[in-house]
Length: 250
Image 1: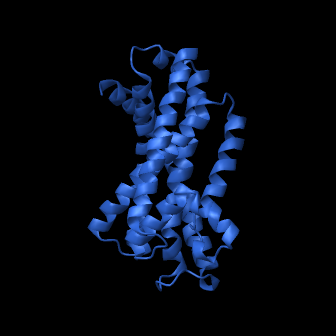
Image 2: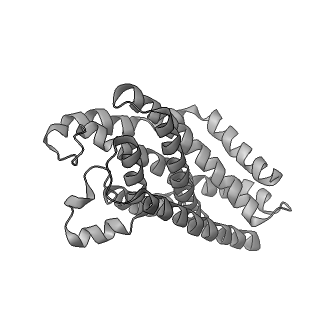
């Protein structure tokens, strides 16, 4: 536990020292919400709940924010490798699971800070959010960020260049985002694309948040949570194995 805490604390301190990361990460979500959401919102179907389009896409934009932040967090593995910091961590007498979990929780913390701030902004200017709903949304975001941070770390651990990471991560993130129902109800997709959406774990995160915040959903909440828990466990296990290979190759 101390090893996990030490790695997590280092990641948090790095994040807090780079305040431009926090500021820049809000530009894209706010543009989507206040420009895209209001600019074309009047002509877009926003489900059967009667919510405005801006409110409808808020759970999706919230998901997008933590997705991009947490997946790109894997890029720091490449930086750590180039600076030989990763080698120093790998030679320490701690288990591969401790290293991975410390790194993953660092990325989760980074993304959750942004998610909480966006929730606060949404509660103030887009739709009222009750305290119990904020706690429920926080729990969903935690599962989502652990899954997506694990994905980013796995990608970063298997690559050695920033350019390669950018190509692979964008190839993964944008399809996940567009097929998640973040910008439109997945029920409007044709049948062959619904298959892709149903296999996308991000779909269930958006659906769970939309149920909590807007009382709209395509799937039962227990299914949304089950998929996110399962995805987190699977990606966490793969991440631990991946970091174990890094230890063996140090």
